[in-house]
Structures are given as C-alpha cells and as structure tokens.
Image (cartoon, rainbow, N blue to C red):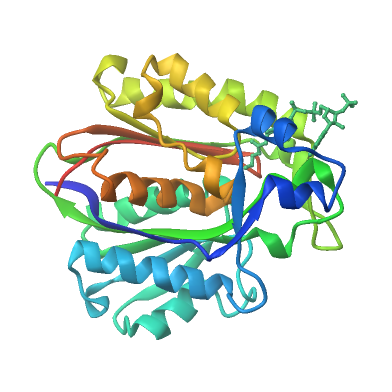
Length: 312
Ligand code: UT7
C-alpha cells in the first residue's frame, strides 16, 4: 500500500484587495507588482474571520471530498505561523469544532514550507500504522502581521487556508519521495519583528529560492526514480511567479502544467500549496495516475518537496 491524499479542500475569505487598492495605500503600482511578482489581487480576512475559521472551512471541504468522518481522524496537523493564539493551538481549536474526538492535535511552524513538513510528518504516522487518517491544514492570516505602510512586503501577502486528508492509498499510488531541508543561518532574511510585523530581505530570499527550489525538486525527482518528463503537474509555493517559473523550467514542463493561483491570492505562506492543489483537483487539471510535484520554501529558512502519484 501507499500513503497519499484522500481529499483536498480550501477556503479563501471573500474580501478582495487589488493592486489598484494598494496604489492608494503605499507608493507602488499595478505594473510593478504584476511584473515583479505575478500578483494581481489577494484576499483579506478582516476583523471577523479568524485563522481558525478559515482552517475549519478548508478542513470541512477536504473531509467532504475524502468522504471521511471527523471522528475517523487520528491526528490533526496545522501548519501556521499566524494562529489565533499561540495556545491553544489552531489544531486543538479545529479538533473541537470538527468534533474529531479521537484526534491528537498540534501546530507545525515551518513558515511557507509548513504544509510540506506537515504532509511528510503525517505520512510517517500513517506508514507506521499509528494513525489511519491524518488531517493536514495549511492556514495563514498574514494580514495581521503585515506592515501596511511597507511597500516591500505589503503587496505580497494574502489570507487563506487549504487542507488534505491523508491515508492509505493503492499500490504504486501516493508519495513516491520527499526532500526536506533547513538553513537557520538564513533566518535573518525573513522574520517577525518585536512589533509583530513580517520583515523580509526580498533579494536574499529570492536568491535562496531560485537556487534551492529547483535543487529540491531535482533531488525529489531523482529519489522517486522517475524522469523529469514523467512529471504531469507542479504545485509550487505561490511566492513569486519568477521563482515558480525557474523551478518549472528546470523540470522542463510547460506553463499550463503549473498551478498559478498567485495571481488572485498572492502569497498565503503555508496555505498556498494546499489551496492551489485543491483548486487544480476540483477543476480537473490533476487526474488519477498523474505524477504531481509539490515544493515549498520560506522562513527559517526552510524548504521541502513531495513527489506523488495521484489517486486513492
Ligand atoms: O514566501 C516566503 C518566501 N518569499 C519570497 O519568495 C520572496 C522572494 N523575493 C521576491 O519575491 C522579490 O525579491 C520581491 C518581489 C520581494 C522584490 O522584487 P525584486 O525584483 O527583488 O525587487 P527589489 O527588492 O530588488 O527592488 C527593486 C526596486 C527597489 O527600488 P530601487 O532601490 O531599485 O530604486 C525597490 O525600492 O523596486 C522597489 N520596490 C517597489 N516599487 C514599487 C520595492 N517594492 C516596491 C513596490 N512597488 N511594492
């Protein structure tokens, strides 16, 4: 048996913040934002929607698609750096709201790579038969740690949540390989300061990402014992279209085989991969037997890739 994804889900808040809106807030312009990042608009949760509200909606969607009851979940892992409170964890809030009485629950902090770290952690618990079904959520309310006067960062981020239910899948399906890594020495380039504002040295993180993302993807593809040509779909962390295209070109796959939800949601950190994945599954772009590559990178610095063959 393999370990894979049984269902996907996502939620984004309804409030849209466009590049034109941002032009009125800081010294920026739509053309700069689109050409440097690929972003046209992003979603903002506002005062009434909490991090846990978004996580809950994404979780319901994933459980529904997987056709699994909340009571049958053994573990809930929530990747987030913007939980409602440090304690209780978002995972515990979700456990209560879902009525997932059998589930252990904890948050995972690996910034934009958090969802990949969560998936890998989940897969090991399933492989060792400790849990049959694990709910993995990536959620961020980045708007609450965004400095809305800093044009270097405020144009980049958005809010949202994505989720997957993981469990056993058929032979030759599910996760084929993983690649995880971290470099704490680079942590100074992307962090939350004492005013709870996200600070980023964009150029340094960009250089790290264009080197590390293609490397991690290549490592994972090699470990999966497949060729680059066999990759059917790429779901990279949606941070910057130029970084995403660098990874895509390294694998040698065409643009329509890469998730590009960045244009409408911006960078939603730990939520970006599961949101994009859920959308591509629901719109039929990701199909059974497809080889799908997920790759995340970000604060820490951290990175991680998962290669899987779709289907259950
Ligand atoms: O999810 C976590 C991982 N994070 C990332 O992957 C982010 C990686 N980095 C990036 O995506 C890019 O570095 C940015 C999109 C953040 C910036 O793009 P860049 O091409 O690296 O631009 P830059 O920082 O080198 O800035 C170029 C110029 C600067 O002006 P000068 O110094 O050349 O006169 C900036 O002040 O663009 C200016 N600038 C802006 N102009 C208009 C910076 N932000 C803006 C803005 N609007 N919002």
